Length: 462
Picture (spheres, one colour):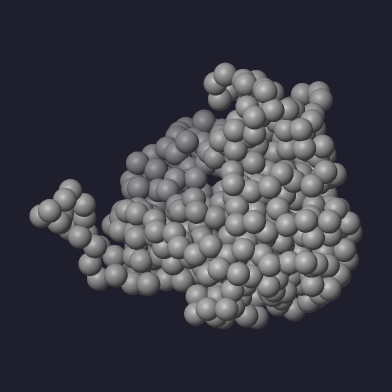
């Protein structure tokens, strides 16, 4: 927590202690059809508003302030320790015990969740430090977990005076957002429940029905915009009139979705604090939530996922590699410029994916392509080349590297197979020496004759 970067981001809401009890199961109990979980490892992390604050702090140079009720018990002490050095904690007096969510998990699957604790904010007036932080904030995120914090009149009065834009992440048992909030982020079920309570009943879960509910919520709450999160379907953003904006989610295979909503809301509030308009903030939040799930979700909240030097990785690559390796699968990688994707590329990529359980495509950066192909190349930027490749169903992840050869990115990814397209059969591949360090294998795939980017460019100039 550096405090660098101007006015703070403030998170207001209910902090929880999340506990995962992770073990293995190979048999059922004799008295009931339930698994016997053994070799249990206990993993604790911040939950609720505390998780949202930590996610925000990892993604910004601004100070992040968490305003939340805190009890006086051992669970609260453990939560304070988890937050220390990450966010500035401003405590609201609280009665009742710390809210704790315990998940019993076997591998990546939850078996049961056990909730305990019922903290209640005890306020006559909001502490001066908390009120000052909210009024001076660059932006405020309200992370409502239905424990009563956002229903308190003193809290609501100060939130109405917030100095920056407010994002409100609601809860089925929580309070309505205060009027004039910039953005409210209910999920599909929450939106349907509140809309029905206002008399708006839209059948089905199609975009027309979701849009009608979002418009009803804007009228009911008096807020600027509503972004209904729809899981793998993405997000529908409505301003209450006109056509809504739909932001598709980045496809993610596997991953722990716990905390995805917190990641979405945290990314949205950071973008608004930096001057983004609401649509830009929602688009950034969708991408960040997908990346959060791909990296392991809340379970990986404290892992360092930064890429190595000179390697810019799309957020899902580490999650893809972890999942495939955990299942004992084969990681395949390939590389190239992929400037103007053509049938030869597609044939090679499809064949490469057939060699294993995932395919990571490593592409040269724009500067690297210029050094290799000349000053007139690339014709398509690295960001756009990556987007096109990611759209192929047989490509699982894309990374961009800045060197003239893929040796460094291969070293970082450590694929089991490195597939090379073209007429290299029998030739010495320089990548082979790197792969031998961990037992990887370089292979050559047949190339579809008559197709090359250089030839396409030359023909276009005739």
